[in-house]
Image (cartoon, rainbow, N blue to C red; front, side, top):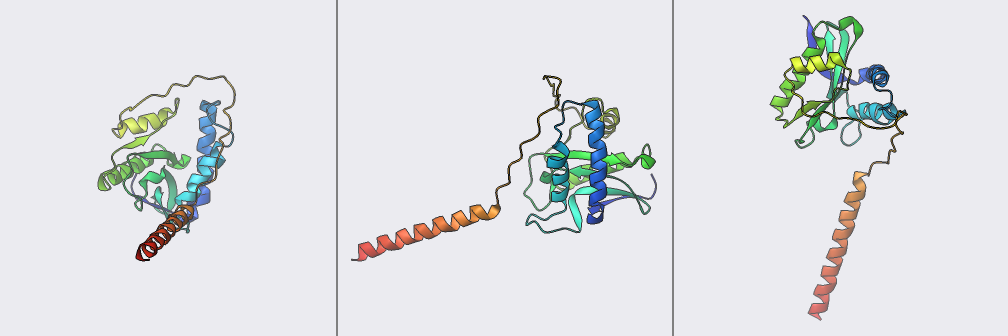
Length: 205
């Protein structure tokens, strides 16, 4: 579509992206009613979006390094979201995943989704990603066609066997804080230095 531009998503879009992510999540649940825990959106969707607008130190960013927004003129048309492995401030990761893509209804069938995917494909070449992948849930014909047209090839198929009941909620554990590891390192180093000093003094006596 003419006048389409793809830019890093500004922080002002965060709540709108969450709302659209919830729409996508509901569509997935309708197609796969037993595959998505009730708390999946809250524990993984919303948290991932919040983290996408934070630096590695936890400071707010004006734009996301892993979410890209499509604009037609001045109108927000859709977005594509990658996992944290795509962050340019991290060392190269073995696999980058497209975790979500959403085009607003008024802009569908106009090449917006294709433009978003092609933007990410260019990034994969520029940043030398080893593996750019996308998970397409069974029944999502539109996404399957989109990635096939963009020259993605099937990597694997996941077959699910289980009782027809709602999947159990995810158990989310608190992430380990980086400062804990650093504090342990300095404490261990101080202990080693103290032992070295004590040994030196005993030898000098």
